Amino acid sequence: MPETDVESATIQRETGEVTLEQAETALRQAKQALAALLDIPPAEADRLEVLGSIQDEAEPPPPPDDLARLALCVRPDVVSYRLGVRRAREDVRLQRAERFPDVFLLYTPFGYRNNAWVGAQSATSWSIGALVSIPILNRKQGNIRRAQHNVVQTEIELSGLEKQVLSEVERAYLEYTSTHSAVQRLERGILSRARRLRDQKYNLYAQGQQDIMTYLSAQRDYNDVVRQYRDTLVRHRRSMLRLNTTVGQRILP
Image (spheres, rainbow, N blue to C red):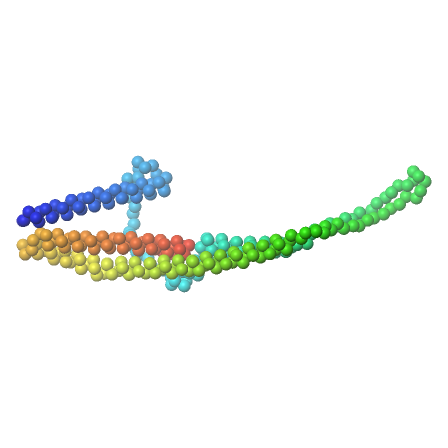
């Protein structure tokens, strides 16, 4: 084997070892972060093992229109703004109810005055009265107008938020379908062809018809395809999480 081929193979092996060390470090960091979320001591983080498949085996989500309607019904920020609109409308009714001052009714059903000590006839009486305040400066109209403007402003903000939610759902659904299609293409075509080509190159190398560098080149191409497949699958799983977050409800595992 030529010395240059040996050197190239050595470089590829050392490069793979460096990549492996980086992946192991990233795995340990991920376990440390997960341990912090689960309130597990850092010393026990390395013993965490996450089980489950990263493959998407779930049923496809509902159409975008159904997801949009669901998001407008259950998303906490939209529900909160709707409650804010209701509160603003109730504030208008409250201000209108308080635009007139309170009227106090005073009533004395029976009164007795003893005049016997002066030799006069005693007297009985009853009385009724009302107390009404007449403000010189009426501030209630200003409060009503301010409450009405608050209703209009809150409704405008709610309308803008609903449009933003619809846009977010549409983008999340588009990302989900795009990554799902990419994963399917890699699984059904590209990945199997790259594996078959690598195996063919290995057989030719084992039979002595080609040198080892041809096989190593095919192996490197196959590794690149596998890495691309893994990254695409991770993006697809993240798109599933983003779709759940955008809708405000778990519709995908």
